[in-house]
Image (cartoon, rainbow over all chains, first blue to last red; front, side, top):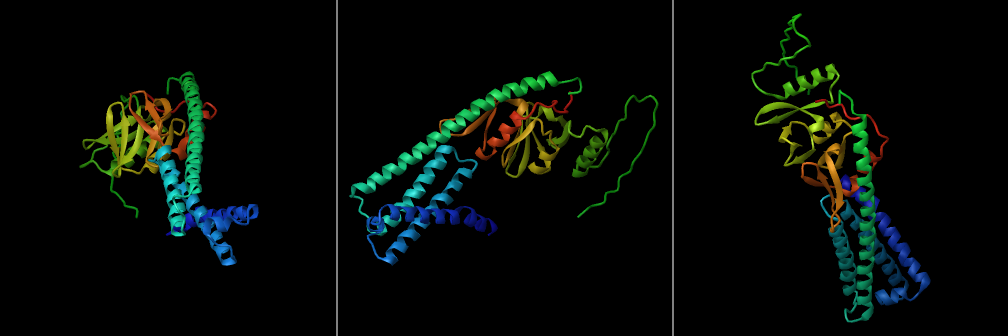
Length: 153
Length: 165
């Protein structure tokens, strides 16, 4: 139970707040956003839109816990995170009446894939660089161990 | 709960003996023996040099420097060395506290490795961080422990571990 509460406060809650803030930011940029995504323009509809954005943020950030699963490779964690985010986005979207035939729906899917692919690539390159440095440090470390060895070692 | 064991102690002073020798006689191989060995080693000041491990029901003392990696599998603590696998009757955390911190570093929730036995690190295409050992075996490092490995390798060079041959 404690771990569930911890997850809620460390991931889901900040994700929910961030999601709502991003959703509100979209409204500031284009007041018609709730109409495009939810098909509503009244106040309750806007609140629903913000709650949806919050839930989406919560799912997205909680999904980052997949990267903490030790036996998951970077590719597996990224792929599963992408699938969860897309499933939530389109599961609720289709329930709200989104039509898969509309081009913007597919543009959104492709954008998500592109963002996750880019994230994976950046992380992969970052680890590659760190591992190269680790191998260099390992050589130095071993040579220092040899040099510092004494008869009692 | 603390258990009190009755132990007979016999001291034999012999001028012909060059260095103190401790012989443990018991009816069976139990956890108590492991504790006595640890206590004696601690008194001798070489607590970190060797660890008491088991194989085929017999206890062996192995030098820490010979350990390649230590990992838990099916709730068993396995000590992997060039001579094969041994077992221990304690937790990974307990063992971690007795291992030489200059040489050993945790690489996942289930595993600790001896940096001195590492041949290289590599990143697979799927993004798994692999470790290859000098004996040809390999394992992987959990992403959250990469920083710990980096820090171990980047530490100011200290005098090597205390395991002696």
